[in-house]
Length: 428
Image (cartoon, rainbow, N blue to C red; front, side, top):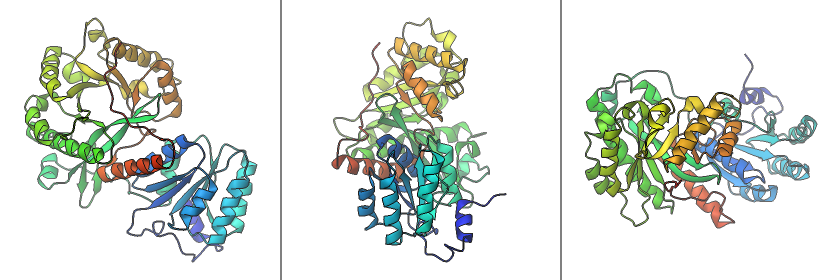
């Protein structure tokens, strides 16, 4: 088994015994990463991954901005791009060495291996902790592996099962939020809430650990908490000037038993531009009873709460002849989204569902996007919004708030890098 970059560096006699950045050595503070790249989309992509992993970031377009920031804060790692002209990256590496920077340096570039090796060698000469260079284009998994090897951010969830009743009774349930992105404009347009159980011993557990076998009463309680907590989170996001329409997953059996009207009226943010809420119901639960779906949609409409059909695709044939659908969003089944950029079967399936959504005046949302090629293909198909590991993984509310604060700060110093808008129902 090969050693991790952190282990390799700690074993290097040239760097042994050197002080590390606070976060890099597992201090109590939230780890911090600096991202330096003239391409704003790369900076934002990396920031989304970092925040989802429990790491704060600061973004910089050039080396001088990086060095000004280093004077006031010491990050655990610097992701430094090598542009077409490598002189600036070399200058940054030399300046970091002269300043005695003790964290890691992760070079990244689409330049050839020789250029990457040369800049790394300069860093080695200045006794910096240089990680193996990262060749562009890279995917989310490559960044996550680097963070895990350095033991930065939140530890991965441990395996195990807990009873949902027990989790609710002990207040272990919390809700994490995944960004929803306008694929064409590359704008943040919403977020979806996902339940997590924070076990005192096993750490953070995903729904697979506590949802199977849950009683109907527990699912109703969980759904009520999801609505209340998401409405509260929306208010906290709005305090930063970001009005996001949040989506919540609620089983149909629970939805018809919950006093949604009372909950929304009591907990919804009381401001004029509240963008409303989306309630996701799965295709298999609703496609056989569209009369019920219409009834629920009409009851929720005055509250500015709309329905979305989740994991859609398999029931296409039963809906294609309808004149209207009561769903503001139709979310493509992740089984169709995966490899839609290259798979000759999945690509036409995605395009068919996207066209169906638009014909009904609904927004098409692709979930489970993990590859850049798939995201590009979805844009060419006309897909409106996307979610997935590529665009940002679910993160605790405080991490999501931190990301929004960073965006707000970056907009004060230049053109808005990530605009924020409330999603509107598409008109055919």
